[in-house]
Image (cartoon, rainbow, N blue to C red):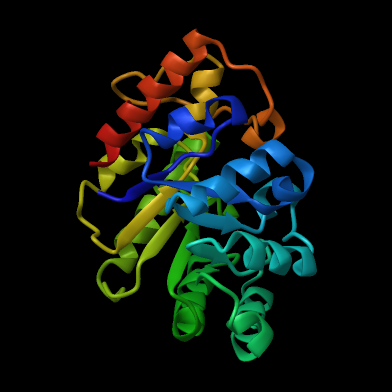
Length: 260
């Protein structure tokens, strides 16, 4: 079973910590939100496993590199994601290689995660071999646009099935010594397809059970039919009622059940 990292609003951050394996940090919020910043500084100090993300999903492009480097040095996360470029294999691979070859960035604290980017499955597979020598973990997105060419009931279902196909195709050759992190998920029931088939999947981050719970939307035994499109970063300071927290906790436990 992979490790679970679920982003959470500040008001229930510690409650979500109590039912997750680690914490997933969005770097732009470290600059914008003092409460968020202190929660993550405390998490690292307490020995929690922390992944620092470059906020590309929220911002459309990776956060300012100088500020990103500052927060890597200050936070000292367990892992951090090398700046990538959405669906651009060549620029992302170039970024990874440059990051590794530059002593200033190569020696930053924390283990390095490289994201597979590409416009086609072939490009994503090529990216794997090209960044493999320079990173400690590889990350795979949930919403590559080429997934939308496959079968599915709606966009989220196509994304889910697309990553399932990709991981199935990778399983015959991917080295188990390289851990893989799954970036987000379209639908929580994606994990039913895996059921410990792929021991190289190390972890997954997603706000899916939290956002759904905040909307008081509880998973059914089959999961969800579609994804809430709200970004948790936009709800980081929201007040959370007891009913919302109960729904979040229910969803997190149900989410684990889909993946274990």
